[in-house]
Length: 93
Ligand SMILES: [Zn+2]
Image (spheres, rainbow, N blue to C red):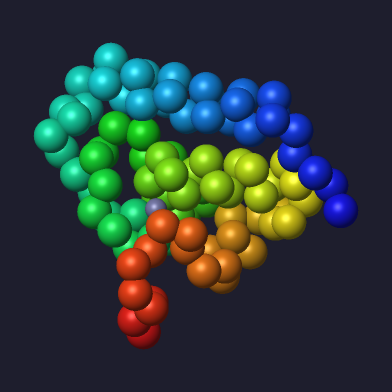
C-alpha cells in the first residue's frame, strides 16, 4: 500500500488551482459550467481536465491524480469505473 504524503496531496491541489487560473486566463468564464463525466455534476467550467476521452471536473481530477500517485488506479478508464466521491445519489444507467 502506497501512502500519499501530505506534501504530495498538497502539490496536487496546488496544480489543480493553477489549472483553474490557467483556464480563467484563457478566457473561460467562471460563470460557465460543464458536466463532469465522472461525478455527473454540473461544475464551473474553469478547472476541467481531459483525460483520454473523459472530461473531469477539478474535484474529480484531483481525486484521479491522488489515486494515481497512490497506485490505486493506472488509467482514466479504471478511474471512471470507481464510484465518484462527490456524487450525490446513485449513478444512473
Ligand atoms: Zn467530477
